[in-house]
Length: 155
Length: 155
DNA sequence: AAACGTTATGTTATAGTATATCATCTTCTT
DNA sequence: AAGAAGATGATATACTATAACATAACGTTT
Ligand SMILES: [Zn+2]
Ligand SMILES: [Zn+2]
Ligand SMILES: [Zn+2]
Ligand SMILES: [Zn+2]
Image (tube, rainbow over all chains, first blue to last red; front, side, top):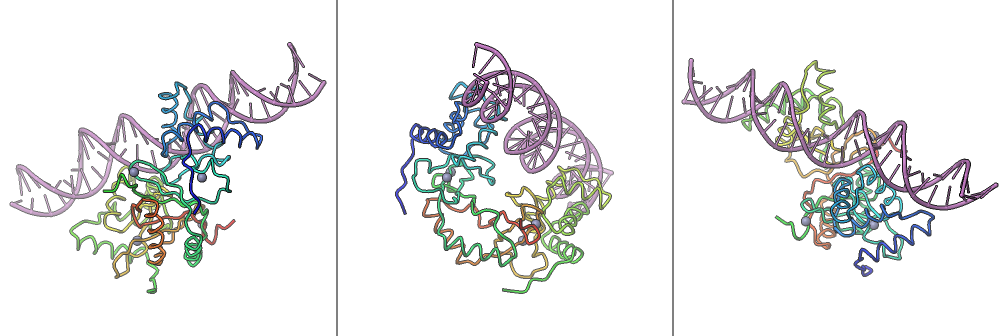
């Protein structure tokens, strides 16, 4: 269990930029704005919510269609994760981490959309896989998502 | 591990009817049609797909809004499960079972929407819960859904 | 600098999922 | 027959998402 640095928006942006440039891709101004929105709000947001964020907090008009494309790009760079269950998007919480990005699991608060990115024990995943294979199915991805309530939103 | 009877549409409908009447609710003609659609197609369907099913196979016009209400009713009677991940609905595969309905887990084929309703070992759920609580979250429900590929749809 | 190809963004159209509201019809009870 | 409760129909609307085409910005080559 390695200690996890809480990431600041500016720090993560900087790291994201150097990551992109080292890969020959560009973290443009618009892409920075979307990533900033996710980093700042500290929770999962929809594409349309990000459009609103850019308008309200950054004074930048960014149509939802552009946001979708940008999210796709950021996901490809492992800077953002798409949460199917919540139909929202969240900044990766390990942008500043050196270590390789394992397949993550997400705990998503149904009430406030706070997201915790965790790594479930491999043994647990293995026995889950076993259950699934016992039913002649195969997990499509080991990126699992769980509907949860966070500390602040318990009933 | 109790053997699981494969359920026929007619058998399940009959059981569903007596179940409803024993609870003072009514399994109307329209509700039967929707349940029939799910039982017959043997996979998860959306509300709009069920509208199409009723039109094409039963010669009955059933607006999607009605289907939504009916699905809500059927879910309340534990005859149907709503799958958030797939945004579709599936007939419970235990309508004919005597035993109480445990909290189910679903394996959903991303390609063909075949669904397997399984019961994961309690010990596995327990250690999952432990991981989740370790992150100060709580599972919103123990009805878990997993994106999968079925036997027929492996790459 | 000019031309070109590539990448990024803008714009519009459209599909799919879902909920809210009000109106109508059916069923059951009295 | 009247009234209440339940079920269905109809319409409006919101949100999520993708496709297709047009324009703009950027980088490279000449
Ligand atoms: Zn991550
Ligand atoms: Zn919360
Ligand atoms: Zn079931
Ligand atoms: Zn399949």
